Length: 73
Image 1: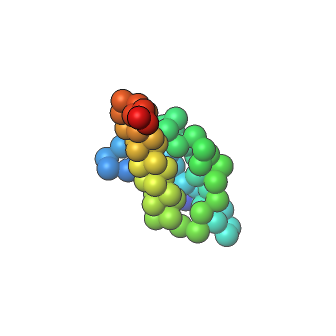
Image 2: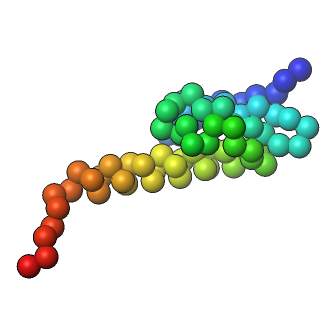
């Protein structure tokens, strides 16, 4: 039997981790975490923590891009 766990970040389903004999492998469902697809993690909790960090990084980057450019005087 294959063990798997859903990964959600703030109620947003972003992927699944699937157990192997010595690690958990991440399968991205949400494109925002595509960079993690195939990643190897020690636990489902670690995969969730890293997914949260990736999402937060991308959200910050969007906010920075949305700010008006400041020009040096």
